[in-house]
Image (cartoon, rainbow, N blue to C red; front, side):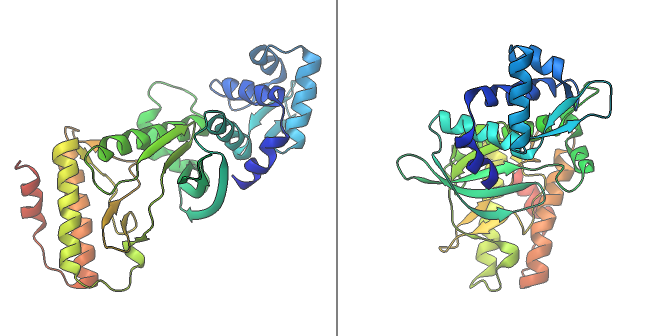
Length: 293
């Protein structure tokens, strides 16, 4: 993302249009032929070739010349450029800050808008370590024979943005969703540390109860289950307020597997607090309480 932010001011609108043409073509195939890029961009062949040379020089594309016709695909920097460009054009953000978090499926940067409001910019990187990771989102594929990593990351961002919007209405300590484009989400910046990395809690039982309470509110009022809850996506701020993050795998409470997934989330929290803080709990009773409004 830092590379994309550095390159973006150097690009001309024609360069961006070529990148968008490749993006459109990638809906049908991994690599897009020059003729198809010409078609999607509506540029003459001479202009198409000139712009392709420029964006390739900026390391925004990958070229395949192994077949009869040369073809191109966007790399992650090229996709970052398109998402960042749109967020800047819409005045959602104006400056990119430092990397503040890195996970298996996403990176998080600090950023600012024109009024110096500080936000967090989350960039989905599903498939970064292995394209096999995309299997967890196989439900996105439907009947499609081809599904690109662009499409998967776009849908992941869209899904989490929707979740944040639903939870934010409950006035919990969830980040406020500011905007999203492609694989990028802009949200309010909240300081804190993952529960897994906190060495000492003054009152572990109190924190445990706060987590269960927040899970229950989200389940009962937003009809949502996190789906992948554990100590790495529960944040505590300096006032020991609870923040549940990473809602990529959330499911509705009427999902066919809702009961088993809710049980897994609750048991993960109970087991962590039992093992690390010796907090006793009854997962069965806790789960039953979720069903009583």
